[in-house]
Image 1 (cartoon, rainbow, N blue to C red):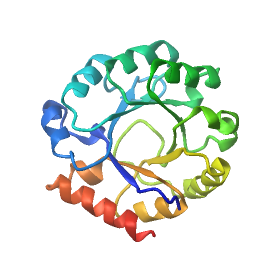
Image 2: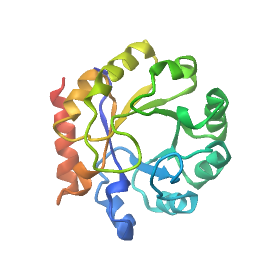
Image 3: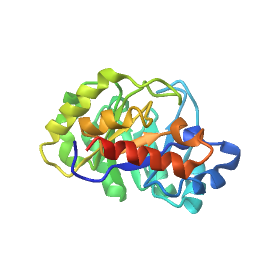
Image 4: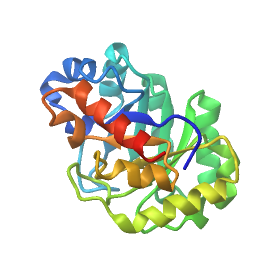
Length: 220
C-alpha cells in the first residue's frame, strides 16, 4: 500500500451528458475529474474531443485527468493540453514510440500518465518510469462503463508498486471500482481510484465519494 492519501477521480463517462456542468459540481468533493476520450477505433466506443474538454475545463471544480483511448494519439496531444487537461494519460498500446510521446506531453506543460490494458505486461513501461507522473492500470477492458472488476489485475498493481521502487509516481486504477473493490486495489498499491457508476448512479454523490474514501482508508 502507498503511504500517500488515496485520491478519488469520478469518471464523467457515467454522468448525464446533457447536464455535464451540473454533474461536475455534484462531485466537487473529489480530487480529480476523470475524462474518458474514446475514438471508436482503439476502443469500441465514441465519446468526446478537445472542444468538449475545453468547455469542461471552464466549469470543472477539479483538475481534468484526461484519459486518451485513441489511436493515433500523438497528433492530438497539443489539442487536449491546450483545451485544459491537467493530466494527459496515453495508452502504451496506442503509440509506436512511447518515450517520445510521453516527452511531448511533458513539453506541452501537462502532467504525464501512461495506461496499460489488463493483458498488457508491465515490462512495456519499464524503461519510461522516469518520464511519468502517473501509471493507469485498467481493471476492465476499456471502452464502456459499468463493467465488472478484473481481479486478475490485482497482482499487477502489486508488481507495479514494486517496479516503481520508491519513485514519486501515482498508480491509478480504473474499472469496476466500488466500496467493495477499493480496499483490494489500495492494499495492492493504488493511489488514485477512478469510479463512474459507483458515484454517478448514487443519489448523493458526496456520500458516494465519502464511502469510497472510507473504504480506501479501511485498507490501512
